[in-house]
Amino acid sequence: MTTSVSQRYRWLLHVDLDQFQVSVERLRSPELVGVPVIVGGNGDPTEARKVVTCASYEARDVGVRAGMPLRAAYRKLPDAVYLPLDMGAYDAASADVMDVLRGTGHPVEVWGWDEAYLGVSARGAEVDPFDDAAIVDFAERVRRDIFDRCGLTSCVGISDNKQRAKMATGFAKRPPGATPDDGVDPPRVFLLDDRNWLDLMGERATRDLWSVGPKTSAKLAANGVETVNDLIATPRDDLIATFGPHQGNWLYVLCRGGGDSTITAEPWLARSHSKSRTFAADIAEPSEMRTAAAELLRELLDQVVAEERLPFRVAVTVRTTSFYTRTKSRKLPAPSLDFDQLEGVVADLLSKFDIDRPVRLLGVRLDLVTDDEDAPVA
Image 1: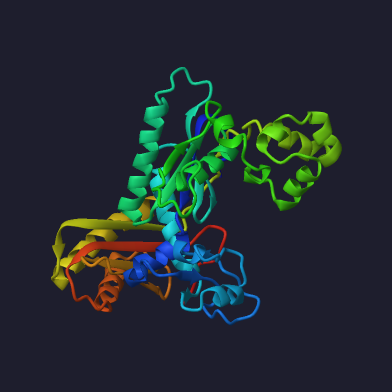
Image 2: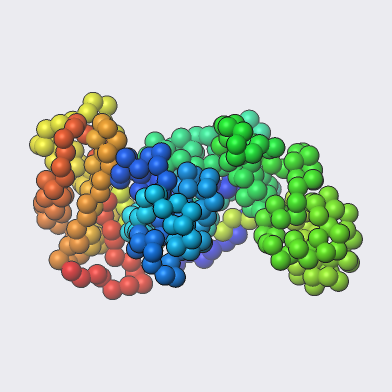
């Protein structure tokens, strides 16, 4: 296995998917668009000790937040649509997005289902082809590619280190100085670095710094440090005396916009591969759908064979002209590379869909046995 190597980069892009689990559910059920949706537990908002995993923006507007008990969310918003977690669907959707990011040719460090960092222009390189305009244009193209291939929207924060890029994503979601009630469209891509750091962050509360939680900000406030500018004005020795050498030094660096500029593209083994095709002209005949799905399967199988991998589950996705999107999957009796067997499963899954409109997109996914686990059995 290849050893992970950290490399420093001139530009770090923080890619953050919008309301990820809710967005995946809306791809499958377009009727959920525009209504409050809350994902968590088994979807029963009266169940004890279960929390909100993701809330749509409509739910967030009335105070529902991730980590809130489902029962508390239900008291705030009893008329919302409550959905259970579907880990398989989120794993597959996230893997598709990470495939898009890796396809840019730049190293990717994954931080979860819905966020990752891209490193662009290694430090020490003789030429950096990305000026401000070029890196912003690149970030916009990344967003478009994610939407075109995965149907998911995202924001991108750009900076010279991870912490500042993460904070830039906050400005990408909401323009500087805007409030939720302003109705101002977010920029979706935002660049934050030394040139605008103090103007945008200087008078903000210390709590707005990445990794500064309520206990730390309260402790700072007790010492008269309310804003980022106040923190910058605080001597390093005072911070170390209050917080200890590790956190004290970190706060000293963080308030000045410093942070980690490395990307570690860890050895990565895909748990699935998928291919999809959006048709120039919508298709309606079952025979056309089967032929198109078989072509996707053949391409996938060639990739899987080249990697010496084994599929153990097949999934088919259908999106109609109304953007109705559904995925059906089936575990194989045993892992197999036999095209005829797999194509029969794909065809049978296609026949299970209730398709009443022409199809604009078909997708096929193969879930793969990994080296660190036994082959799943039916």
